Image 1 (spheres, helix red, strand yellow):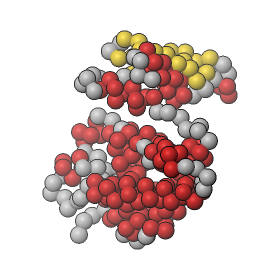
Image 2 (cartoon, one colour):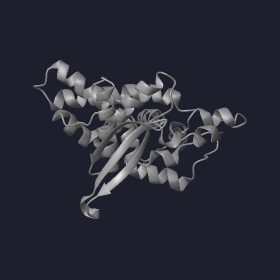
Image 3 (cartoon, helix red, strand yellow):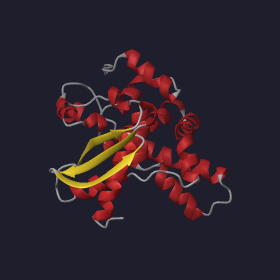
Image 4 (cartoon, helix red, strand yellow):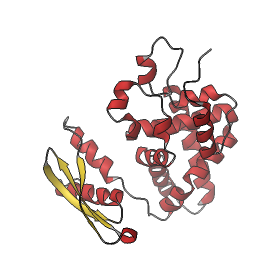
Length: 237
C-alpha cells in the first residue's frame, strides 16, 4: 500500500478549497504528484498524475460544453467553441491553480522544484485537470461537474461578455522559447500613486534587451501590457 506523503492537514485544506471530501485520499495525492517526484524516488510505490490529467481533460471539456450549451441557448456553435477554448486553456487553468495556491500542495522532484516548477503554467494547468479526473473517479460526474462550474463561474461570465484577458505573457514566452532562448524577465521600474491607487510600470527584457514596457493597476496587469507591447513590436499581434 502506498503512503500519504502530503500531510492530512494540507489535504483537508485543499479539499475545503475545492469543496469536496475524498473517500480515497490516495487519488487526491496522485493528482498532486508530478512525474518528477516518483522519477527521483523510484523505491516508493507512487504513480504520477498524467493518467488522471488525461481523464480530467475530458471531464472538464464535457462539463463546460454541457453547461454553456444550456446556459447560452442563442449562441451559435462557433461562439460556444471559442468560449470553451478560452475556458479550458492552460493560462486560465494555471491562474485557477494559483488562486487555490495549488503549487504549495504538489509533490515535485528536487530538480523540478529548483527550476520553479511550483509556478510553471504547464504543471499547474495539468494538475488542475488531474484533480478534476480524481474527483470524477472518487465522487462521480455530477460532483465533478458541480465543482468545475463553481470554480469556472466568473471565467464563464467574462468569456460570455468577451472580457476574458488574453494571456500575452504566455504567448510571448512560447514565441521566444521556440528559438531555444531564455525566458523573458519582467521588472517593475516605477510605482506611482498612493497605496490604494497605485500604478505599476513594468519592462520586459530578454538578456538585458528591453522588449517593451507597460503599466497597470497591478503588477500582473502591467506585465501583460508589457508583453502585449513586445508582441506588437514583433508583429505577432
